[in-house]
Length: 356
Image 1 (cartoon, rainbow, N blue to C red):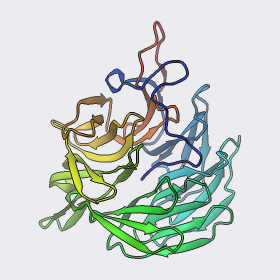
Image 2 (cartoon, rainbow, N blue to C red):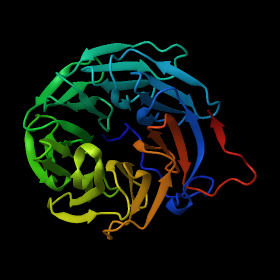
Image 3 (tube, rainbow, N blue to C red):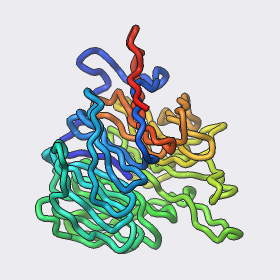
């Protein structure tokens, strides 16, 4: 899982109103309750809406100003990831039903624009290229596929992963794609030819439990630093009981040029999985942990192993999205809530928006 929208600049450290993201000011300011536990989430590139998928197989759109909610219903199973095309008006969702679906972002009564059977088995990740012309998907068939966004043609089928593909990310300079899998391998591909370039060893994010005979963990999310010098991969380690979700979040930091593992970002007193990872504009690394220990936003400095701040969320968290302004984050939760946390001072004498 990863997020990069076409023609979207990195959020500036300082916003037009003078606001700067400060993790230590994080607080939940808005929350909405749905009828089913929520899974994946994403802001649209314009920052007007936040979308979240649910265990009833739908995707829901919340208007951030009015709190109005609109359903997007066509998938036959859970939607695992989503992204947006270059026009900012088209949403693309992928699910456990093998389907990739195009949607009109702002329609009052949204219906699918295009539906493609994209993989055999679950599709776990979708990402958009910097120029908006390509989509990349990955799934339980161990394949990565590159698609033309205009007509949905599959341009490349990339084989080489030996386990489920969990995450994809286009390099912002447009030449390469990276993909991460269950076994902890991150593969770099040349986009134009579809050729394999090199692999990063993130196997510390993989666990095999012989007693339970289960592989667990994997590269759940990938992010590149604003200066493009570092690649961060999130997941878990210390999984003493994988089926019971007894593990700790872990983020591995690689040097992009040398492939050297520079740092293992850890945290204390938190049990869960590192579901998502993002870079803030100043190079601070932000991750989401969710699992047996609840939900946390975690923050690391690039030159320190241990987190410098953690913000406890009200419930088990499952996904994280950063608003285009760089000041707000959306999180989905098992308790059926979508929550918006702000990394700015609380407004004076203003009650939090709540429904449900």
